[in-house]
Every structure is written in structure tokens, then in C-alpha cells.
Length: 92
Image 1 (spheres, rainbow, N blue to C red):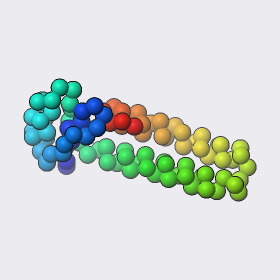
Image 2 (cartoon, rainbow, N blue to C red; image 1 turned 180 degrees about the horizontal axis):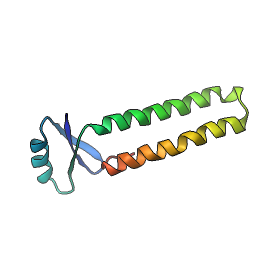
Image 3 (cartoon, rainbow, N blue to C red; image 1 turned 45 degrees about the horizontal axis):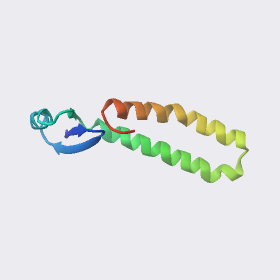
Image 4 (cartoon, helix red, strand yellow; image 1 turned 90 degrees about the horizontal axis):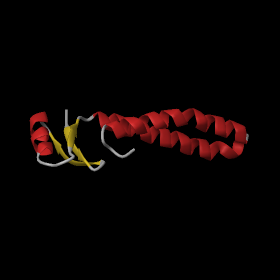
């Protein structure tokens, strides 16, 4: 597993060991350590973006209500992902 030092909403550095990452974060005010779970969340966020883009592409073939209903179903998922990224200290 990789460990990342996060500060000001962005990843500063990556480390192979938790001890090394923690020592580095302790030297930087406001920094914290996270694991690589953010990779999965970032991938999920990208997939939601792709789904929204696909809906936009087929929108001319559908009624406006159908398009809005599909987008509305993705909105809660997008909000959950952004919230989780925010709890990790990363900008959503």
C-alpha cells in the first residue's frame, strides 16, 4: 500500500511506509496521511463524469424529462464521492 501526505487539499508526497509518511506529515503544519483508497474514489468520480457525458451525447435522442431523470440518479452518487474525497482532505 502507498501512503500520501495531503496538505491544502492536494497530495504533497507519496511514501512506501506509513512511518515515513507520518514522520513527513508531522513536519508540515496542517498535513495528514491517507492511504491509497483515494485512487478508487477518483476512479469512481471519473466514471460518473463519463456517464454524464454519455447521457449528454444521447440527449438529442431522448425526451428532456428522460435526460434529467438519468442525470438526477447520478447526482447523489457524485455528491457521496465528493464528500468522501473531502473527508480524505482532497478537493472533490
